[in-house]
Length: 238
Image 1: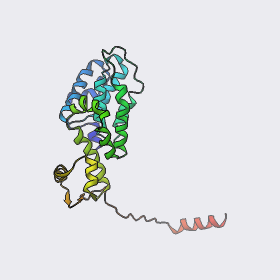
Image 2: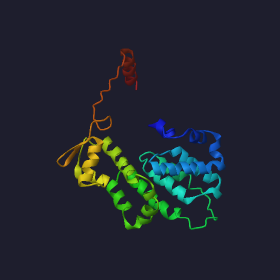
Image 3: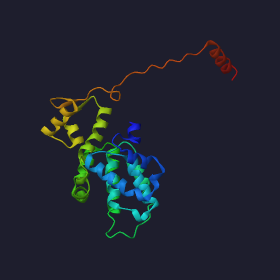
Image 4: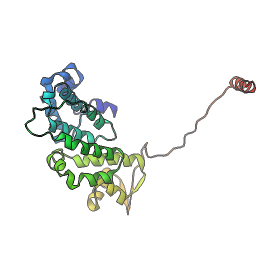
């Protein structure tokens, strides 16, 4: 998992050279990285290091700053939870100089608290609260102008929930799983079938994996007689 995070298989040789070499600090390459971001948005791919390189270029070159690009980077990072991608991106924004050359008002300051809240809900596995917040009237602007362009965004959020479920449960009620995935009825049944899980009545069975299996661990210590003698002697002299 670490290797795919550092160097995704979908990353091209050109992007690999930009991300891994000194050219990542060359402001003339920001357009290439921004185009790569929008490729990720259209194709459901994800490359955190390449997106962090964009934010670093914005940090060094405030005149390059594009708020829509930043928002899209944060949206992609949301679905990497529980990995720290979102917070890594945020860390490159805190010291961002205010850019007064924008033609329109900057949408980032108003959306940033919302995105942080959504990230927090996903990180704490509060999936029903996430869906309720995400689908609220207050977030209509986020849905209509940003996540609608991010192909498979809601399915990517569901994968965050699935990662938590597979690491925690061997059996889960269908109603509870439905609230985690924001799916019901035939849609939920189709999703469960696609995952290769079994739904029997109102219960969904999760296949065993290293994370959801409880195994007893026996710890055995070997103490040599000479060591025990020293220990007893030391205790007697105290």
